[in-house]
Length: 227
Ligand code: DX5
Ligand code: ZN
Image 1 (cartoon, rainbow, N blue to C red):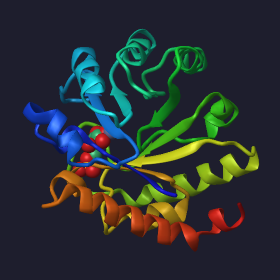
Image 2 (cartoon, helix red, strand yellow; image 1 turned 180 degrees about the vertical axis):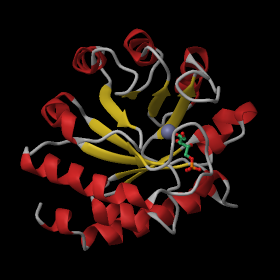
Image 3 (cartoon, rainbow, N blue to C red; image 1 turned 90 degrees about the horizontal axis):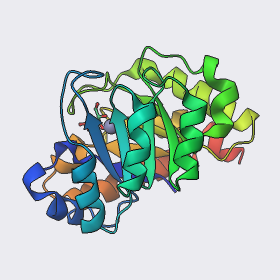
Image 4 (cartoon, helix red, strand yellow; image 1 turned 60 degrees about the horizontal axis):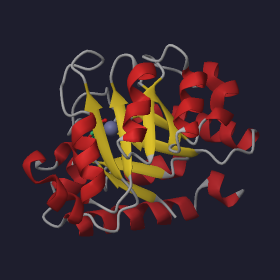
């Protein structure tokens, strides 16, 4: 079944616990950490992740859009994140970092910006629990989905199948009722949605609708039929 991860970047930061509650039943809460260096925007850090982890039963999927993830990512595991994603463009030693995240007890995930190809990282995939393909330039919610990322999603799914990996393939950026089916068809199975969830009148209903669309598209997809 498709996993839907609402991004709290589009939520009300003064009411995070209630905003988490508003999407109860989601698989994960997606938490965007930005440092105003790796991306031109600033959001939140370890103390807020710590508080949010205590305030909700939904596991936290922390997406670190920061410089020096080698230094900071382990602290997000300690803060209570169930999954920690670092950007490969920022990591000095991605394999060592993925191993450290796993050793500390979280799922290890690596993100690629739109301009970063997947092919150089084929041998590294077994070290990961999830790969995140950005479908917008990281930094802001509410941007338009980049269709030209679909072939990269497809090629990544082929690599996952080729190596027989249990690797989740996440997409983030511009995912909505209008684009989620294309992502699922191409091979994604974890979907981040910010504005499409928190911009809706009923966020929980928006999650359910996105999940239904993704599940239906997956059922007919080339990659899921082979499984
Ligand atoms: C953007 C963030 C996303 C953002 C997505 O850099 O990584 O998680 O919240 O927002 P939407 O779904 O509105 O594109
Ligand atoms: Zn994100």
